[in-house]
Image 1: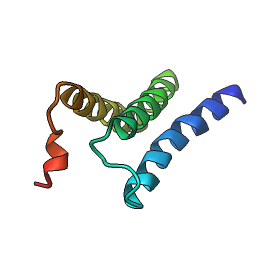
Image 2: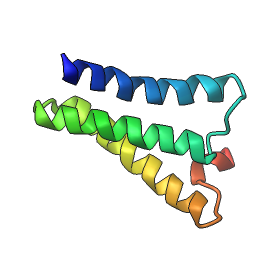
Image 3: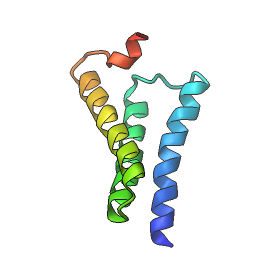
Length: 86
């Protein structure tokens, strides 16, 4: 049961960022958006790895890596590649 709660919490972090971006309330290159995506996807990737769910691990692992790379770019004062629109 506890693991299910963690899984839902990880999913909610990603969904909150997604909905906020879709409504124009959060930029996809903002720190909050990137942190929510990184933490949420990392939590889900760990759970997928623990249960040998390889498709889910691939999805969430790549999501976490892309979010982390974008977060590093923003922290270094650069715009993430995806935010350029091309």
